[in-house]
Amino acid sequence: MTGTIVGSMTDNARLGAGDAAPDFTLPTDTGDSLSLKDLRGRKVVLYAYPAALTPGCTKQACDFRDNLASLQAAGYEVVGISPDKPAKLAKFREHDAITFPLVSDEDKSTLTAYGAFGEKQLYGKTVTGVIRSTFVIDENGVIERALYNVKATGHVAKLRRDLGLD
Image 1 (cartoon, rainbow, N blue to C red):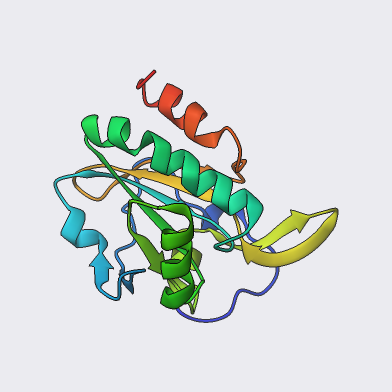
Image 2: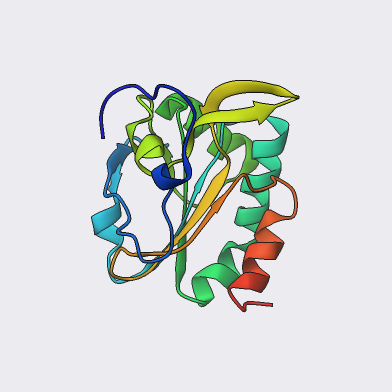
């Protein structure tokens, strides 16, 4: 998906259960690249966050880190996506001991394809930016759950409950 978003995000720009997960190949925090198609055969939790090294995004990433073993035991791979440069993602990984891949979507094309970039409310104002979202993708690359406007705190615990892992 290319182009500029004009106007507000509409519900039909968002993904839902049964939709094909948009494929991507993006640079990671380690300097490699990661493609969604490389994860076929595994379930994936892809979560979109606005900015590395900020309080809310750090809390969310640490929650995923702290729950990674149980998510992986249930067959889920976790991948974080933001518009940050790979070098900033590497600092984030090192600073907070993040143990799963972080991918960089600097041009926001993948975030846009997932409906995770657009207009949102921030402190009572309408702004354009990353919409904190989580996508559960099955082994065949199909969206099982698309959760938009999630909270940074408590989201992983709720996701675990929704997935029947608690």
